[in-house]
Amino acid sequence: MEYPSKLIEEAVNQVSKLPGIGKKTALRLVLSLIKDKEEKTFALTDALNKLREGIRFCSCCHNISDAEICTICASHRRDKSILCVVEDANDVMAIENTSQFNGVYHVLGGVISPVNGIGPSELKIESLVSRLNHAQTEIKELILALSPTLEGDTTAFYIHKRIKDLSVKVSVIARGVPVGGDLEYADEITLGRSITGRTLFN
Amino acid sequence: MEYPSKLIEEAVNQVSKLPGIGKKTALRLVLSLIKDKEEKTFALTDALNKLREGIRFCSCCHNISDAEICTICASHRRDKSILCVVEDANDVMAIENTSQFNGVYHVLGGVISPVNGIGPSELKIESLVSRLNHAQTEIKELILALSPTLEGDTTAFYIHKRIKDLSVKVSVIARGVPVGGDLEYADEITLGRSITGRTLFN
Image 1 (cartoon, one colour):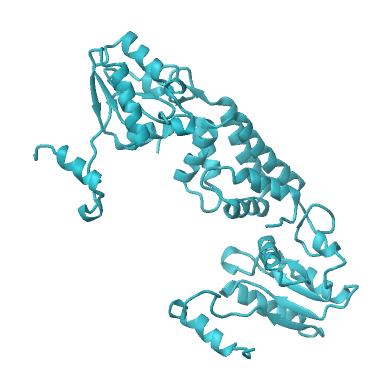
Image 2 (cartoon, each protein chain N blue to C red; image 1 turned 30 degrees about the vertical axis):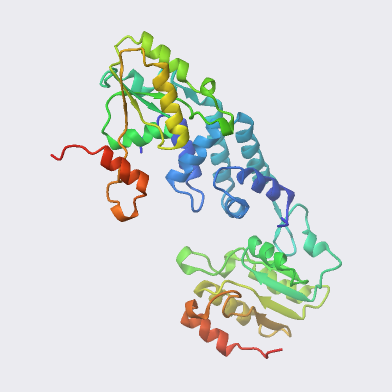
């Protein structure tokens, strides 16, 4: 497509670099910014610049944080003996939203994926091991809450291998049919897991 | 949802003000920016700021332009006697993409929509009338290429009323079944229009 202005073209190119946004959507967004007040664009770019300049990561769990230690790690109400290992900051938010977990987190920053050139050293796995060794409160349980994909499973196996000599219980989140889902539409692997991983009815 | 950082919250709020982007998508985009290099965010915000500061509109057709007069109005190859009236700059791009039109445009900047408080005075309709009256090359035909909606039709009627004393031929783009569409799935109004507006088979 030919754009009527170089400025539009450059803006569309930049916006379409965002995940899941193609050239058409980018153009729509860019044109909406032009139509709206100048202040709206400046508020947006200002928020993004401030975010990128000011964003920090918790030195303990590597979650996104405004301070040196994030609010979850700093809280006295959280059970420091249960550690939930997740891939990304959005997984922390998703689990927090369930209100079903009162422990603390460890954010790996990704999963092992040789295809994308991500090995164990790119992730916060060593930091996890040293956290398990040197935590002030003894960590009794490690919950692996990684995506049920090949990469997620590989990462889980790697972590398990690295810490198998430590006296910490390792668990993984349950895999089975989603609540509200129809058995008919569940794939056979998920359904198979839901049968082998069955729990007592109560 | 609770965000781990005020900076994230502010960025998500700003991004989710864009059309068609909700809080979840905004969060995904914002987190992708954090994960990526700093330069990517700065390139994006820089392009948007430059766009909003530098964007100009053609003083003749009101299309987006890098200069005082847009490339279409300035071109000697375009037929200045045919004027296509469109709602927005993206309509110009869409029509240009078809390569079926060699005239010039007039961008209204919207359509009459009392619900959204947009009356004729908010649009470039007076500018269109004075353009028809004072054009260097006589304008022989005015093509109304507005959306086939209530607002689009209202705008078309209003423009037609305003210029009915001028000796200019007024046409509207054809309405009918889309090419590649199935008759079965066309709504009755569209199908009805395609019958009343039938053309000779050749």
